[in-house]
Length: 435
Ligand code: UGA
Image 1 (cartoon, rainbow, N blue to C red):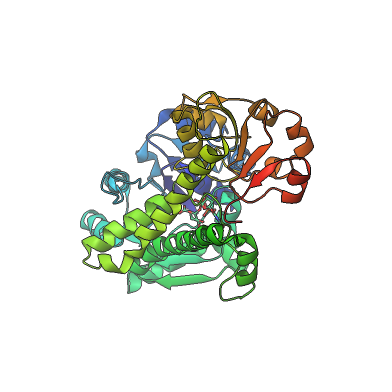
Image 2 (image 1 turned 90 degrees about the horizontal axis):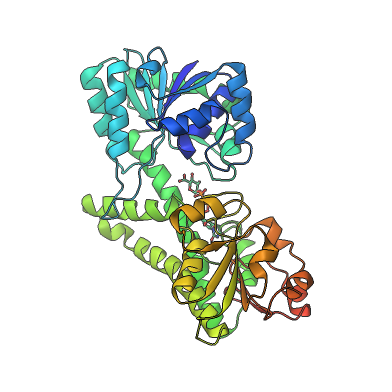
């Protein structure tokens, strides 16, 4: 099928390459010429396992091209909208890029084309955009097909998602849209992926409610961590025990520094803002607590670090391991790790930070921190070591080797991933989260 993808950020770049991998003929558009040039050269502009390989393969096959000229989408039958919806100043989602993408796309649409929204938008956006599209091109149809990919697993989640959700209008246009999307995802459907056909508003809500649920699950266990810290219980053992109940499930019950990244934090805020606009703000009031619990984890670690360092941070050396918001990513958007590293620096500590992939992205937004190229360099002469992102490299560290480098054997395990017995045996005071 001939497909266009508007927006080549995280979602769009992965989607475009994945669609080409599925055998489609894809043209991907972005307004940023530097990004387009890099992608066209097969150079992924962010770290995502598997993306460089499928990008190179798709470019070599001739089925994928990148351009800054939206006019080149003409001739494609399905046009995916994959631009960002960042957090605006009030917490509500900023849909400027989605509006601009649709406005730029409409002049190039033909009757029989499908505009397929993938971006995370406030509920009601799709219906508004659908009217804008059909006002100009009555035979085109706008549908919503939310994306559930996780960074670090983006290619896998795009090609083999848990489920496909199609939000379509009722009637023949909706049926034609389902048929077109079934053609796009033929290989994915053949693998047995469940596919749910719903209305536009439900499709928009599926996305934000999934992220709200995941955020709530994480904050729930972090609230239990706060209690466990007071009574001397172990939140990890608690999560294991309640997680055996299939109705609860063990996934997303890892207590630690909480959630960050470009999705969960902004999506819960945007969802609340939208509910308030709709007059049902009360329904999502609990998300304010979810957000607050999450942010308290960062403050808690900073306080713990101060306590362990004897309150005065000036002149103290702190080794920070991890800056990305989660492992297998170089993304530092709303990263708890980077936030904590920077707060410790602001309080006067000398912070040496190392992340296997995110030093560069972190340095762009927090140039004041001292970035080093290895664990050894980060922990050298440290009075305190903090593990803030659970990269495998950090999980597998040899505590005796670290012990030989640090000044004081004290470690904060912000993600509860270190082998406490081994670290304790190597002479470390180990402080976990909620244990
Ligand atoms: C999230 C969702 O998981 C995806 O389904 C969704 O498509 C995506 O947002 C999006 O809206 O685009 P992602 O932001 O890549 O994906 O990250 P997650 O894997 O959900 O992790 C989010 C944060 O929660 C990370 O900071 C992680 O460290 C933290 N987390 C996760 C915990 O603190 N505890 C857990 O048990 C799990």
